[in-house]
Image (tube, rainbow, N blue to C red; front, top):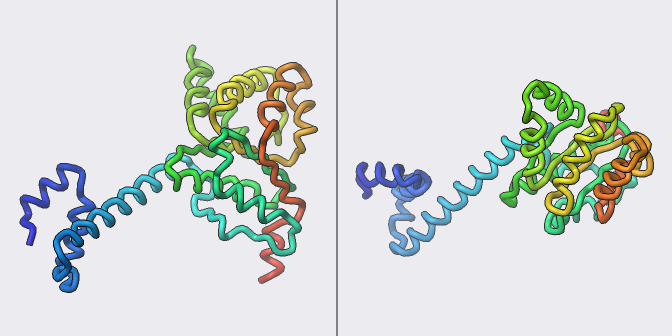
Length: 246
């Protein structure tokens, strides 16, 4: 039996999970009959898994996902004519190893945001930092900080450092020259270093014009699309499909 003083010291050492494992073992008579080294192994396994789960929860919370409960296994493929193999491969997050991007295309209601959150959540499970933001909200956040001299540097640093960034509603709304320069700087900082997931109703061929058609537009489209994984979710509205099945 482990005394309370020992439990206190374990908690001070940030080993509260070990105390939980001890309590579980002491409450189970069969565990108490297990050899000491085996009990230690079981305790370490329990503590390791508990800390890992806690770390993943924190990463998911910090990612601010639109759908924090999104799961790859819940994706709907039947009746949609989409490439399930490509989507499941993207779900391994191997694209992050080469800092490649993912472009998720499709009409309204096809589940672009949901899939993007699935990818970001998978990255969190791999202990990689993620962040979700709608492009209109990103630009609004920049505008709200515009009064300070270092506003752009601060927000660019914030969104450039996460290992996977989901930019939802990409170019859904018109952008001006100031927006384009800001986006160019963000994309330039992430290029070849971090993966970006873009959810859009427009094909990359249409991005150039929507980004002003200039040199910065050329550079952005090239950096975002070259070597990217492109997933087309088609035009089947998932909400309507689920309603019909019910």
